[in-house]
Length: 318
Image 1: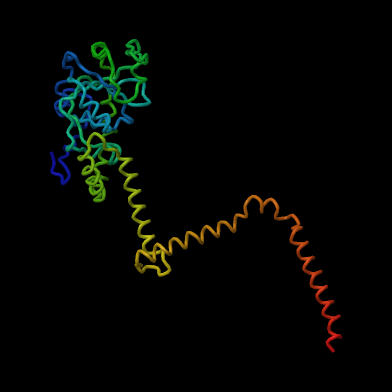
Image 2 (image 1 turned 135 degrees about the horizontal axis):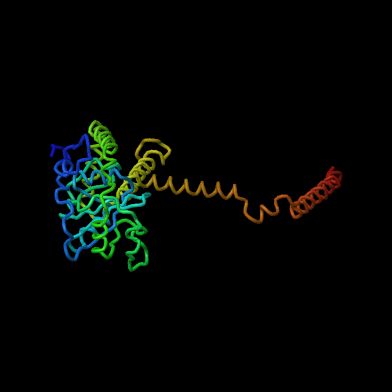
């Protein structure tokens, strides 16, 4: 293990050739008990990995992790727990592994395919690494009525003995080790990118510090959303403090701030009421205002009568 300011990381291990399985099993310790017998009363879970990269790391370094909810499910399950691995968008299972530790909430692997998504880990040992087509397990029905390959990630599956026997019967024609050279190159790139990027360690440290406080309820998406909301609230408070008064940038007493805010609200309401004429005015704004016209004519007639009286009275005064 190499020293790391965050947590110890397994040393990178690469082979020139993965055709010799004895050499492979000697290099990777989690393969040294391959083909071990099935323990009684075993609990099986289906693992659906999005890509081969993470399964590649699991085979080489003997670790696995999932979402916080799935990790809690695996940690609470009755032992022994076996994981039936499958990669999405394939037509076969990849292998079978056994969990040999409790969930370790302070042991984090930095080089999963996805950045800052998976935290903590289980230790695992591999029982089988060989391709098992879906049709070999299609006859093993579950109580839900679905086939095993139709279930979602981290679903507990039944008939453990039949699944184990199917792997035993399957000949070692093909397995995931044949694509390890390409996957090793992908791992090298990930290690180089993250080891040379100081910002990655800073962000990774931030995530694991929160994760370790709530290992079975942590969600990266929820944390990012909450962090973004706190940042928006902070900017909004600063905006209110500095720019909601006539004197920008000058802190005002609470009384005057409240008075100004109430006046601003009243002004906005008046502005809206002027812009929105209302139903009646909108419907009648183009109609002739008969009442106003009649009132104007009446006032004009009254003024004419008054002027006429004034002209008649003026000679008498002379």
